Amino acid sequence: MSLPHALLTSLLERPCSGLDLARRFDRSIGFFWPASHQQIYKELGKLEAAGWVTAAAEEGARGRKKVYEVLAAGQAELKRWVGEAEDPAPLRDALMVRLRAEAVLGPGAGVVNDLRHRLEKHRKQLALYQEIEQRDFASKVLTRAEQLQYLVLQSGLVTEQAQVEFCERALGLLGDRHL
Amino acid sequence: MSLPHALLTSLLERPCSGLDLARRFDRSIGFFWPASHQQIYKELGKLEAAGWVTAAAEEGARGRKKVYEVLAAGQAELKRWVGEAEDPAPLRDALMVRLRAEAVLGPGAGVVNDLRHRLEKHRKQLALYQEIEQRDFASKVLTRAEQLQYLVLQSGLVTEQAQVEFCERALGLLGDRHL
DNA sequence: CCAGACATGTAAATTGTTACATGATTGT
DNA sequence: ACAATCATGTAACAATTTACATGTCTGG
Image 1: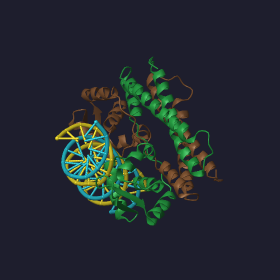
Image 2: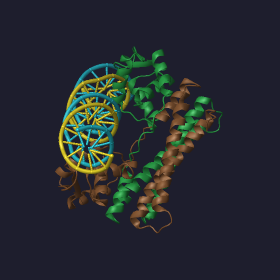
Image 3: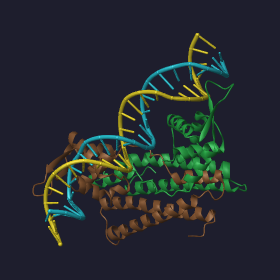
Image 4: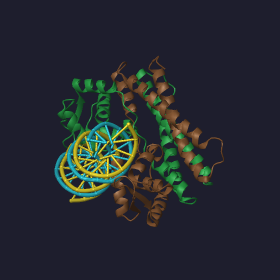
């Protein structure tokens, strides 16, 4: 379970409120560890109870906005966790199950629907990653931290590229002509 | 949720007991949709209640062994589900979170431990898939069903290959000399 | 004043993991 | 007899998703 450590990482990069965190997740760490605002609020409560972050009510801000900041104990915990080794999470891919089902059901079972749908999704995600690459990492000298962030983005790039190629190949095998 | 349909697929390939299913999952569909025997037993109960499979107590067998078989309604349901389109499941990769944490914590935070560990795991998984490829798909003419099964295996092959290359690259970037 | 965005949460349901429990059959 | 394996489950927990609830502030 990496959510607490993903939050600590993001808060170390910049202290902010729960909703800000949720928004930043949607276009950064959330590509590799998605989380809804509900989950984030709950987890922030636990981080605070554990003494890893402090919450400061921001005066003059809307509503009862709280700004969270990582404490020394939280940073120590994050460092401890980074040093741990973990088995890769098991894959769960419904498309593969559908392909196996199509194999046993025979031609025309309909897996092309999912293939076309996912091809489009993966193309969009790939385009998004390429946009981020151009915007944040193109034509400049990178610091070590930026090199690592770029590495993570590249993982996303090759993954989406591979997914696109897989869908195209599968559709070709199934005789689909809507490429 | 694809477990029921993964079970239907596997039972269509060959009717068998819950434990047999669990064992076959471990070296086939389970690479793309893992399931423990506890989960499988529970789900088989639901499939039976839904009228998608029948359970027949096998006489002369050990204990209270039951053999499950797919009914027409189950096959129809599987076909319906295969035709559905679904968004790809969101990625969740703790290694990426660790890399981002290492970026913000600075050199020596220890992500190399996880990278080395995962490099080894992915190399093993890749070797396993290559073995299956040689054993089941090398040097023979493939039926359509076999082509689809091979396609699924190839997805695993390129995925593991990409993971291996990513870990090697990351370790190179971090100056690790234990490749 | 009211719609819409900001901001923080609670509750229930689903899915999956881990630990435990029970009994039957086979091989030695 | 007894250990190992076969075979089927139950229970408790953990993580995530979905739906709902509540109140604040800003712009028109």
